[in-house]
Image (tube, rainbow, N blue to C red; front, side):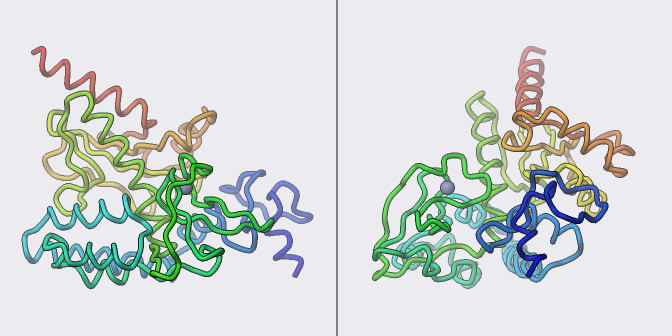
Length: 302
Ligand SMILES: [Zn+2]
């Protein structure tokens, strides 16, 4: 009971603290009885959790089918759908499944979405967040709000879906490991596209997150709260820039580096793998976008 209570407190105020790196004083493991993003990151770095296994099985299943049929476009369409439409009505899901472009992976799409939980359906409807497209859920004070990790605008009410018609929502694992980072990946792609570049998302069946055509610098986008945990994860599962790319970048989402100048330094100093790399660097989202655009202009001027 004590431990469950402590888990709701900021780590800095635990009455007794294990000596660990990778846990900030302000971080909590539980909020309102549910695992925080910090807690889930710990679960990932401390070995495979059930949720991560489920998420991987689904993504690998889709990859296999798309590879077997030579359809990278279907894979990209599937990833885009998880990012752009994490919640919808049963009817919209049925319509999406009937789309000939998704037919190949329809069974996987079906299993990615679950019926929305009761805490998202109070008052006969679900509220879709205007910031991230996920569902608002009741918090401890009985208010509905967006509790998604990294939501860019958690108080923006989007639209409502009647509960009676059935509402579906992505599983927690897919939201954390696929849709959350995917929002950042799409945002970076849009910034580069606005500057006139052509960007491929998840090229060659997910060889990296994004690859600009004009400047072959492959990006692996990360949005971990804690740089030390990310450093461990990268050492465990290093990023290999795909064939055809000139360099690789671990790109840290702006949400994590804004107001935290020490983030990259902590990542670099704790990541044994990154230290030994000559072709891969860790940079902020802003630095990556600026450097790619500058390089593209230099190339065009030559
Ligand atoms: Zn949101």
